[in-house]
Amino acid sequence: MAAPHPAQRPSHGAPAPRRPRLTGMRIARFTTGEDPMYGIVQEKDGQEMVYGITGDPLYTEIRPTGTIVPLEDVRLLAPVIPRSKVVCVGRNYAAHAAELGNEVPEQPLLFLKPNTAVIGPGDPIVLPSYSQEVSLEAELAVVIKRMAKDVEPEQASDVILGYTCANDLTARDAQREEDQWFRAKAFDTSCPIGPWIETDLGSSAASIGSSVDGEVAQAGSTADMVRTVSELIAEISRVVTLLPGDIILTGTPAGVRSVEAGSTIDVTIEGIGTLSNPVVRR
Image (cartoon, rainbow, N blue to C red):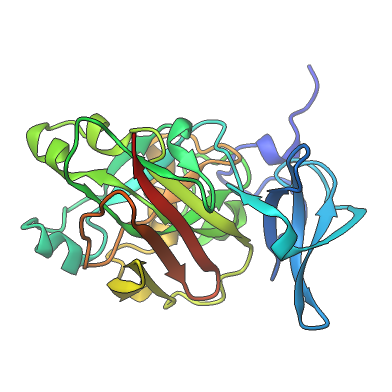
C-alpha cells in the first residue's frame, strides 16, 4: 500500500513530515466564469489582484499558473468546501451565553454542520420555511490542513491552514423547541464562509463583529473566547479525527439578532476581512 500523503497523516506524538507552513498569505477560491480555481490575493500598485495557482493548496504545492486578475473582476467562492465536517463550538463567549440565559459549559459544547450548509461570499442565505426567527452569529473559522487526532494544544498550530470569517446562522425558534440542534443549525446555506483564508491571523485579540444593512449588531474580540483556538483543537481532536479541509467555528460574541429577508449581513474580523451575504426567503 502506498504511504499516505503528508497532509493525511495523523498528528499525535512527534509531528509528521509536512509541507512548510504558509505564512502571511490570503488564499482565495474564485471563478471568472469558468471552472473554479485557487489564487493568492495580493496588492499590486494600489490594486488588489488575484494570482492563480495550480491545484488545491490543501494537497498540492502552491505554483503560479500565470493567471493574474483584478480582485474586482472575479467572483469569490467559499474558500474551502469541507470534505468531512464543520465542527461548531457553542457558548465560547461568556457574554453571548449570558444574553441567551445560559451558563458557560464546563466542557466545550460541540455540534456539527454538514458541508451542504457552506456557501461563499455574496451567496444568498435562504431562510428555512419552518423558522420565523433566524439569528446571525459572527465567528472566527479555523481551516484544518491535515489529518489530526489527539493533538496537544502546543501542537495545534501545526494542523492549521488558516482562518476565515464565518456566520453560524441559527433558527432560534427551532433551537428552543428541540434538544438536538439539527433543524436549528444544519439547514442549507446556514454556514457562509469567506472571503478567503488568511494563513496568519497575527493576533489572538482580533476584533470580530457583524452588522445588518450597515447597523452594528456584534462588536467583540477573539480575546474574549472562553477557550482558545489551540484548546478547542485539542479537545475536538480527542473526540473526532480532523481531516484536511475541516472547519472549526469557534463561537460568537454577544449581540446576536434576528435577520429578515431583504437584508444583507456583514461579518468582519480584523486581519481577515469582511464576509457579506444577502438574506432571502423562498
